[in-house]
Length: 346
Ligand code: F1P
Image (cartoon, rainbow, N blue to C red):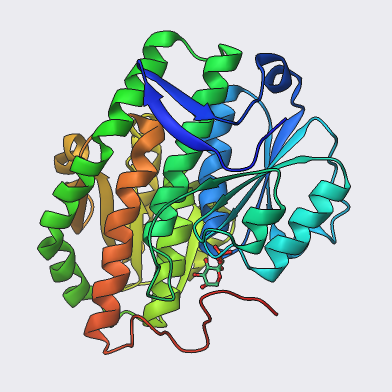
């Protein structure tokens, strides 16, 4: 019953998704959510998995759009497919969306470009209204896509009653505080510019983190690769011991994301591990843990504290700024990186 353009509102302390027209029963009967996207939009999907599974206690599968058609996807008429695309024209995402529809899924798209093919062909679209994305590498689309994920998550959680009301209220009020907190990060960007001036010549950089910190690390690593051409990888911090650790040698730069409070100690144990092998560590955490992290990491970037589920909205900003300043130091053409197209339509 999803209708075409869905306009979110916050009214009387609740998220209202006009025209989503999903009943509590529809949401309760949903067997799973299936996120389909490419590139940075896929990384938003990685965040969505952690966020929506936490809010809804429903399984969320995230599949690269370029793989979707080739993996015999298990999709039913009770599956909600979330198709994420800035341009709304990415050919792999469009093809995957058509396949999901053919298999019977309801398709809700999260798109920036109004009237684009994915927006038109989906059952319903939530526009991100990020404005024109001038540069090839996505930045503000990522943040607005995340915002839409929170709205969908809160809306469905309310229908399902899957989280306590006080937690719902806490997340919603923190969500509304995110723009001011982002401003604060942007105002303090000279610190990040300084760190970039120290690290811009590193031949390769690793991003590590757990849970949402890992999902944001994937995007930090991609941004760096896209615009500065530095080799970079992102790993779930717990994977280090399964092989990656052999790549760490004196002088390797490790960007350690440890904003997620409950996992802070765990990720710090990985920081100790890579430091003992000679890595330089640039840490990212919240203000409340910055001093603790600075005892082990070489440098620390901190973002304002918020609800753990909302951390990606804040953490991604310094990751984007880091990539930006590193690329600037290296004299790269930031808005038009080599070999990249704004939308991949063939
Ligand atoms: C997906 C994407 C972008 C990336 C690049 C190529 O685009 O992978 O994330 O920055 O420009 O395309 P979209 O489907 O979100 O428009």
